[in-house]
Image (cartoon, rainbow, N blue to C red; front, top):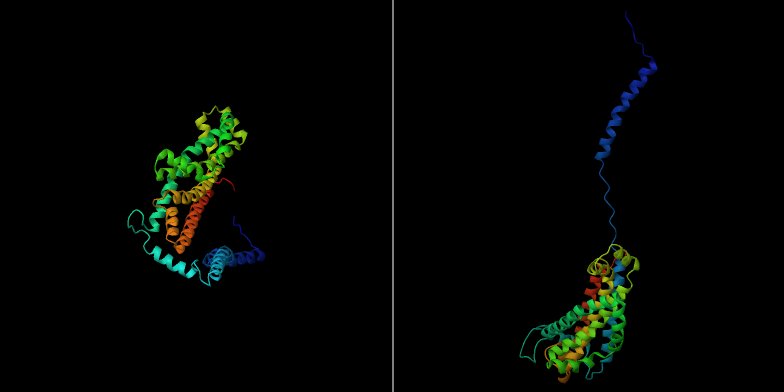
Length: 301
């Protein structure tokens, strides 16, 4: 038997149309792949934000120098900005010269002052931060020590200097003692406040898990209290840098405070003004460093 298959004219035209459109359909991905990708849009630099950060300090400094120049136009014992700048150039051209124990460059004086601040502040941190944890953690210790802190904290820093001279019989350890006793209070108070503000739920979980006191301090209290500790450290460094200048004026030796007093005895007012700017700059750098460090340990979004 012979069978035949017949196709209608409509079926033939539909097949032809499909055949004609198939190559076009398969060629679209290739054409799309050949098209170059659009370059990502670059975010324009925010020059306005930069100007708002830079211009105000520059204008403030320019205003200060302008008023200073106007006030010294008629001469007098107070040096002009230009004379002070010339003295600064000469002074910083050789900041580390040494002509004996009483005649050394400003660089050595700054380094010696920073060394005393570092030692006094380091001892204060070793004592003050653990003491703050104890006061904040235990109510009995809080009630026992808080009256002493309230009594001793308002005492002027220089009032402690004679005690140091009496005990240590030397100017350098007396200055370090003064730094220690004046910079310890912000660390003690801020650490204790941080411990007291830890949520009670955290400590309840520690009791349920029967954690030891060491694990409670290291695993729960320390991460929560660290921002408070760093705030106390920042305040203590500022206090220490303020106190060392006054202490060195009275104790002598090599240091920025003694250098200021020695230049006053020599009636070199330009060097005193330079020292004021140097002291302020070093304090600003210490503050900036600790604020930057504190931002890395802040657990807020």
